[in-house]
Structure formats: C-alpha cells, structure tokens
Amino acid sequence: MEKSEEEAKLIFSGVQPTGNLHLGNYLGAIKNWVELQKKTKCIFCIVDLHAITTQDNQNRILKNTREVAAAYIASGIDPKKNIIFVQSNVTGHSELSWILSCHTPIGWLNRMTQFKDKAGKNKERAALGLYSYPVLMAADILLYKSTHVPVGEDQKQHLELSRDIAQAFNRYYDVNFFPVPEPIITGNATRVMSLKDGSKKMSKSDPSDQSRVNLSDDSEEIKKKIQKAKTDSEPFPSSLENLDDRPEIKNLINIFSSLKNNSPEETIAQYLSKDFKYFKEELSNLIIERVSKISSEMQKLLRDYTYLDSILIQGSERANEIAETNIKELKKIIGFFGS
Image 1 (cartoon, rainbow, N blue to C red):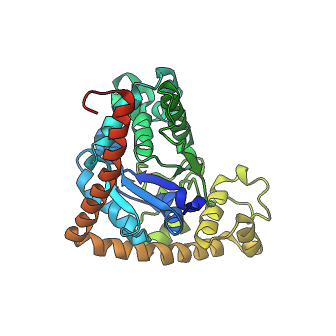
Image 2 (tube, one colour):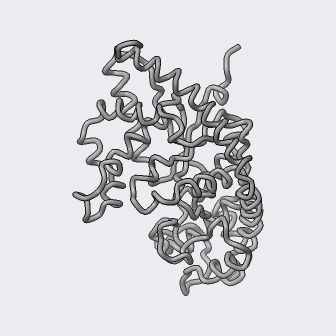
C-alpha cells in the first residue's frame, strides 16, 4: 500500500543543550513540533555536539541535556510516537560529518554568516568546530534521510547548505541516496525577538534576563518582564502597515498571535481600541497560562532522572538503528574496505 504524502515525510529537528530555554525556543520550534508529530514521523535531537563549539557551554552539558529533554516532553512531544535522543550517543553524526566535509567546498562555508557573527573579531582564535558547524548540521539531517526540517529565519542558510551538500554527494557518486530536505517555516513567531530590543533575537546568551521569558519563570517573573517590555509612545497599531518601523510592537503582537493561533491582523483588530497596558496584561496572562504548565511539568520530570534518562537511552537506540543502516549503505557507495 502506497504511503500518503504526510506518511512519507520524515522530519528532523533539534535544540542545543545550552540552558535557559525560553519563549523563543518554544514558539519558534517546540510548539510547531507538537503539531507536526500528529501527522508525520519525527526525530527530535538534543544536539550536544553543537553545544561544545563554544567553551562556555562545556561544563553544564549533562544538566542542560536533561532540561531540554524535559522541555520537549512537558511541551507535549510524545516519546512513544517520536524518537527523542542525544546526538553524541549516535556516532554516525560525527562519522557522516567527516564524509560530508570532504564534499563541501571551503567557499560554501566562507559564506555562512552565523560563523562571522559568533566569532566576531576573534575569528583567528575561533575553534574549527564553530566554523564547520554547518557541515555537522547537514550530517544531523541527512543521516536519517530526513525530507523536511523546521527552521527559524536564522537557520535557513544552514539548511540551504545541507541541500547543496546532499546534491553534491549524489552527483559525485551518481546516486540518489540523500533526499534534498525541504524547510518548514510555520507560525507567526518563527523569530521571537528580545523584550528589550526588537532588532535582536530573543536569546539565552543575552546577559539581561529581562530580555526573555524563560520556560522556568514563575507567574510573577513573567508578569514583570512583560510589563517592562519595550514599547513606544504611539498608540496601538490599526494595521500591519509600518510595523517594521516598530519592531518591539510587532514582536509582542506576533507572540500573542502565535500563542492564540491567530493571525496578527486578528490580534490588531481585537485590541485596536485598547492601550498597551491592557494588551500587556492580556499577553502576560496568556504566556502564564501556557508557560506555567510547561514549567510545572518540567520540574516534575527533572525530579526523576531515571524516567528521563530511560527515554533518552531508548531514543538513542532507535536513532542508532536507522543511522547504522544508512552509514553501512553509504560506505558501500563510497567503496570503503569491508563494506
């Protein structure tokens, strides 16, 4: 019996275990994954190999890995239906990354803007892992022959590179081994911005905790952060027009719309005659309603490492079965001895 288009899809995505998961991670990624799992096969990874590309993450990997796993499950990702696993537990990621790096021109990596942003003026002292990070990301996706990848705006360039690498490998060996993965960009909040500066992405690395709503924040903390969120002196907008010139307002409207599953136009129409104080109160209540449930469930899960670890071990075993099969076939294509 032929599979439907949805059944034939395989979605891969992941989050780095770098601590302080926030509303941007939830709205930009995890919330969408919860919907995608209802109709499509999904693999959700905790990408700890990526997390060690910067030194400041290296001492908290285990704690943060469990926290990400807890956030996945608390948000509604079903570990029985999906594979949830830790990247470093499947050696195929590193093995495929090397193979793909031998089919990736330096010029392609030189165009990656995220390395330039993260390395800044210390480019010469940056680790090779930070530079070759996009090749490992391509290996993550292609190892499972993933067909679709949910991405935020800042990851589109890396997915495009994954597509280029897949096609380059297929051409070089005259095979149709790797599918060319398609992006999935969904929702109103694919790029959630800082509460203090609408031109910057909401980030766990921002030194100001007031810039984000953490998934671990309690009701009072959320209320204070939204009340203090930057707005401007102009009235509540009457349309989407000119909102690019009011990034903080646009961000708050997008967050509200995403949580409500509304369009930004519907949100504007609903609060057109209200002031920002009232809108912020409504937004706070909406975030508290959603985040407090996740936070509570996360704390419960983090008190039981045995259960959490068993999910990650089982998920890694399931992921490894797929990875080993694909690596074995890949080695035959390349012509490695013993394959």
